[in-house]
Amino acid sequence: MTILVAYVPRPEGHAALDKGIELAKERKEFLLVVNATPGGGSEDPSRADAQDVERVEQLLSVSAVEFEFKQFVRGKNAVEELDDLVAANQVSFLVIGLRKRSAVGKLIMGSMAQEILMTIPCPILAVKAD
Image (cartoon, rainbow, N blue to C red):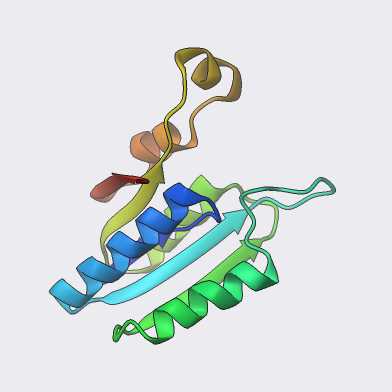
């Protein structure tokens, strides 16, 4: 089985990654870490840059778990990419990070976490950043 981590280069993404590594060790499962953004002309803060990718891969390489890091920037949003990965792999659960947002912030900006929870057909573990 596989533990899937939705990674973004923010505190909530780091929390999800840390929890995914911890659980992969405990359960002796494969860890698949994914950073997915639709891409486009504007700078996307959810996209991990080369320095962050290197940091994540270094952390994973010393973690003593079997892993793969994938980054997708191919026009699909993160929910579509995660849904495709869940369908293609035997995913035991998905780990996502949550950030605190006001009710107005959720109304104006929407909630990626809510869309993931409502769309992805596997168990989901949501963690908060410290």
